[in-house]
Image (cartoon, rainbow, N blue to C red; front, side):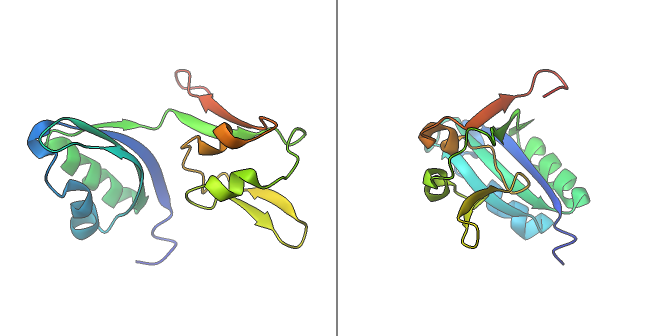
Length: 147
């Protein structure tokens, strides 16, 4: 699969029933559907209901097949309902956010010494909003179909 084929990315929230909490369901997404995954947050205790925030990448067709597979096994799947934005005027480019960003969507451009925010890579985990000293990073919550 080429990088162009992997251009479809979604962040989803999974709720695992206790019956499947010990099975390798997420790993099977890679093996069976050629999807890559990034676990952003997970809390799945043994033999109990658990939750996971997951970023999936692959083709749109394989993504749909993978989500159907999860649902067929009793896992509830919901789309991400938030995104991160930055107030460019407030940002002082201190770089604090770059140290905590789990997927390098915030990074320091060594040429300009300014923090770059790559919205396409952002997984909307919200960690940057907690550490920004000037509160330039914001969580936007989806309201119906509008941001």
